[in-house]
Amino acid sequence: MKRLFLLITAACSLALGGCEKDLDQVPISNGSVDTFYKTATDFDQAMTAVYNTLRGYPDREVILSEARSDNMYAISAIGSRDWDPINNFSASLLVINPYVADAWTSDYLTIFRANTLLDQLATNGAVTGSLRTRYEGEAKFLRAFMYLDLVRKFGKVPVLDKALGPQEVASTPRSEVTKVYELIISDLQTAVANLPTTYTAANLGRPTKYAAEGLLALTYLTRSGPTYGINGPGLDSKEYDKALPLLNDIINSGRYSVLPSYANVFAYNNENNAEVLWDIQYISNASLGLGGSFPNVVIPDSYYTFSGLPFGAGSVEIKPCSNDLVNTSYATTDTRKTFNILTTGYTQAGITEIRPFYKKYFSATGRGTGRGDWPINFIVMRYADILMMKAECQVRGVGGSATDAATLLAPIRTRAAQPALTGLTLASLMEERRREFAGENLRWNDLVRSGLALDVMNAWALKDDVSAKITRPITANLLLYPVPQNELSAAPGLYDQNAGY
Image (cartoon, rainbow, N blue to C red; front, side, top):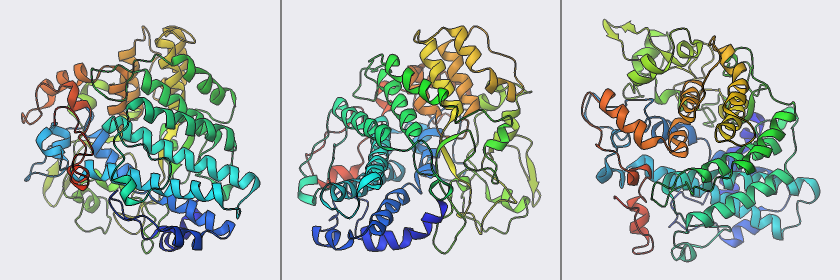
């Protein structure tokens, strides 16, 4: 699919260039949409434009999910940066935080583009047959992906299942979490039915049936989490029996496997490998902006110079991994630790940096033309996650036992040079997920879904918050982000703010 990204500029300018991120902006007029959607090529470009909105997703998730968790202690040493309130649970500052605002507006931009495409598929005969079916599955998969992201961050959000004009948007309130899930589940069920099981090389990167099954299983697990007494993603629905057959279908398909080498999962010359269910595709192309910038979010400027890369200043400041992750969670023999995190320190221009940081997606030889042009794909879902989600069901007593779950994780532990787990519990499973997916932006949602978020985060803050910056205690209301102030101001009185803000 990387070749399709060459169409992004044309697709965005012709089909969707008039759409801004903010919900209060004027969407594409019916006239311009009708003028554009004339041929199958037009639909293909518009579909690519929906994918293009995902470009910044991993960048903000590093902050909103990874730095929010006990995996990172992202306290600025110089001044106050926009990620500090995320790390610190600073309620008064999160309402106006640009990362929080970008999550809302970027997700809804994807939803708007998907809705526009779906509306045209329903009324325009330019695309028919299996291609129309697939496009519907792709658009609904991406819409569901964004709504799952929204409900996990904000709880109640407006449900928009078609492209609306500004006045309609300005009168659409937040829907209850149950209603948001209804659309997510319906969309993913359609995606499972409509999407192929595999693609040819030119279309790699599009979601498959199995990616849709994995996302639907994750949706059921997320709904099954505790409510914490808030209008959040957990409904305490205990739907592990709904997640299990989806996970089993992926496992039994035989299309995926745990690679023998952990590092090879993320190798620049081994993308779209047997462990990848779905990823966001990037390609080095500075002029069109098709490269990824997410590796740059956590890499200090001095490390680029130390590694011999001719990149100027721009990543601002180091965002260290937490001492608890580096020194407590990982065993010294765990090979994932040295691949994921630089722990040895380095000296550049006479200054020694000893704080650990993620280098998981960094490659001095694989890099593109600059700090925002990395050609490595960002893996959203991989087979190890599928195995661990099934283990989560088994630990919960569905589809097996804790012993079965430990056996399921054996290949993951073996390649990390670790012995088999014994006496597996939900807490120890989540800690294993922490080690396996460090730097992949899953930790925060894992903690919330498992019900461990408050206990783990408050205990961690007592140990690792040496600068005494983090709000204590972290309360249930802080498990959600606030509705951004710019959204509240765009339609005064339309949205109620989340409790605690």
